[in-house]
Length: 259
Image (cartoon, rainbow, N blue to C red; front, side):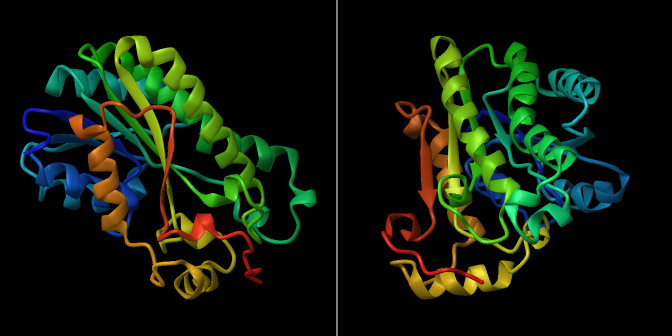
């Protein structure tokens, strides 16, 4: 039981198809006690139904775009479990209209929203979690290849994910002396609730299955198990890294366009 006696907070579960839920399942299977958030009342029922299937788990309201809500959630988590051993950040958002057409037409507000929700929120929730991570720990976030290569229709989310990956490196440097590791997982395209906002997501998944060296789509469980490795003692020497879980797609030198 790799996480026996360990306590974690997972931010970003929307439904059973969420990558964050796959991570939760992997962590719980290895003995972790888990806390969750739900962004708003619309998602509350979905999240609470899932959380009810995990012994000892609880969910608290928190929109990660609001520092006051983050602070309240961390207070509630602290009262419930005392300390945290790991934090999983699995949230990203850009207005749907920013994910069609050309990147050059990105609006100022759309850019600000994407960077705030998708990148700055990692800083905000990590800083708020620090008082609970008294014994060191691990922070894991989710990124995508669009951070470093142009992916049609990914647009401003690619820029936001690039900022997220840089954020991981800076946080890793700041928090290393506290024995807190910070890493990102770059997953292949997966049809989650958030991914539906990206125009052509189905074509992206089909393209991935055709060209990735493993010739299959990325599965949520594969990402979940990689996160388990990173938050457990098995990943104790790794920080500031982007770990690819995409069937090898990122190694390809010439990627066909997905229009």
